[in-house]
Image (spheres, rainbow, N blue to C red):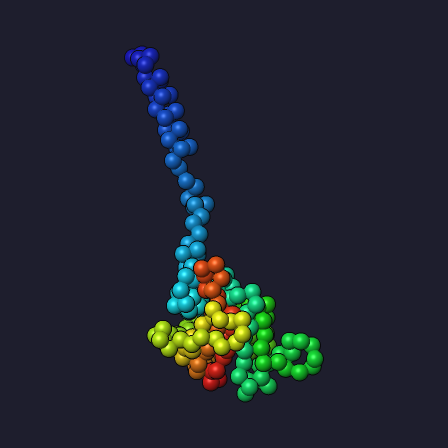
Length: 199
């Protein structure tokens, strides 16, 4: 029996349509479309959003979110009792200082999130949980320092837990952290983190 002449034409047309639809609508399953969702997470439009994103950065061990929370002139300030233990010589005068800046903070936090302690005693924590107890707005303070008229200070009690599953151990710290926040182009940033923790 002879194949009708129109059958190959229909098959060719169907094949052509299938190829066209495949090219137009198909996505490579091994390279899905990249969608950057981080932008929604780091819109620090309010002081509360900023501090909630700080907790998120610790929970996810996400250094990129963490960087986006800090002002370029960021300072981490220690209480006097901690200087001899963890203070570093920032200005090269041979003495431990009670603060460090943005670059050193990112170095230390990157190490905590993904490398472990520099002395090799502690691996990367399996879980990090930072809980900030953000007070109501009427307990926030104005920064009295000259030039900081638009800054606000939020004293938060906090609990920090670093958990290590393999050894079934954890490291905890708690106390008060004073966050000096400043607004730049409608977004809030941490300018100073003053630590008053109990190690």
